[in-house]
Length: 437
Image (cartoon, rainbow, N blue to C red):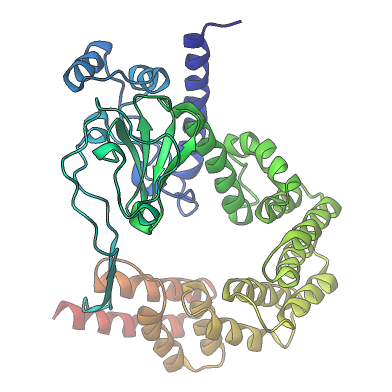
């Protein structure tokens, strides 16, 4: 049997490989990047290991010894960076004393920056002193301050004997226990949300490995529906596949949907339909509409136009449901009617633009429709409205105008519509001139 230190090293190297796979798949490839929760924060970065001497100096100063798995991570992997939630704190930040209960504060603003509303956690008692990592961890079982009247066990600070591993969001934190019977475990502090302090994972590496499995599955579930057919999937997809299959067998609807898209990429249409139907069987919300969305995507790829249109119409006939599923079905309707050269295409384009006001692509399609009808002023009005209604998020007004107008101008020039392109360009130049003044 391998020594524990060797087992820990092997687990850390496996974690390193999976972080590398996620970094390649989830961060460096817009617009499919940062699909995993928290990746915008840590960006899968590994900031460099600490020396054994530096770690020992911190331990001596604080009067504690780090659990073996976490110490090995610091020595061989990274001091902070990639990790669960928004990423791991550096050791220095992790050891900052905690002298108050965390609170959540939320302020809502309108587009002009005016405050609309604010909310926060209720009043919290002041702790008698700051936490100390060398003191005993005060809990032997889960503790909820609201249930105990905020009574602190043994007059201790509730964060004694811990360091903060990661910020979960909304003021919640994952803590590593440094001493006592729960030494080496990861506990979760949810007091900012009205919860308590309770065990989250048996050990640091268990916590890391659970995050990596979850992140791989989260990425592949989000990425597969949007990954271009002409590009190979990154290696993270193959790594995630056994995880997703296991989740599907446990009744996870998103995993069944991911498997449907995977079979679809491979041209395995019967298997894709089977996975889509399995997803609908376990889905808690709008199962039939979501089944129709997947069926439409499958028949689209199979170029089975009658069944493609039937799936779209079946889904749209279900009135109640999410806006996102209706958007997907309206997009499929435009695509299938375009493939069929249907006289109903213009109506479908109008319906999609009216529903999907946040899609620049849908609004540009409607503007092209206006131009085909020789109503160029209506196309220009639509582009002006697009700047206010859609997700055109460039930093300057000039960049916003160009992002909305130039794609239409370029498509008109490609189609030989020179006169229309000139008229739209004149409108753009006029608006850019107003911005410059």
